[in-house]
Length: 168
Image (tube, rainbow, N blue to C red; front, side, top):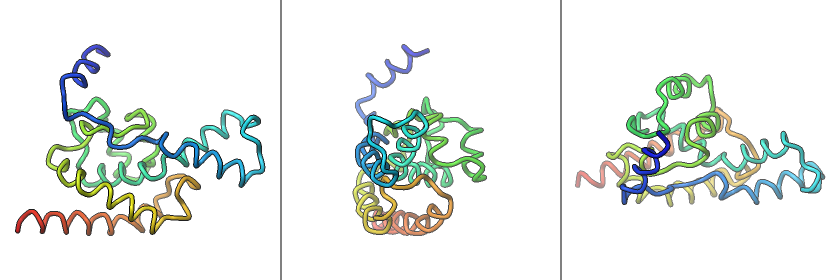
């Protein structure tokens, strides 16, 4: 089965990593060590998990939005219907799903084909928005449904603008 997964990824020229949690790991590590006055050499396994979750914050928000709007690809290796239902019901977090089912990475094959053109143009805008609106949370906090709900309408609006633009 692993061979099939690797073969699938090699065959698809469109399969590429959209984002990864480790992109923000160093930033989250520095913040965590400063906030807790701990040198990095003294971090425990639970500290490292907390740091990983903070590094995943931005991607967890986006994965939750994808799941809640049925934009995760059902043919993806990382697709898990029960997990998505839990995410939609807000009984797990975007981070939980990202860590358990997506190996802390979001690939183009994890995203519905109909959404890929939007993602290509949108993701940079999302990250700009993310840095502007959530500047205090970047790599400093874990996924929180309250924060998600604060930005969900903004992401919906960006998607709505995209849909209006392609119809014209």
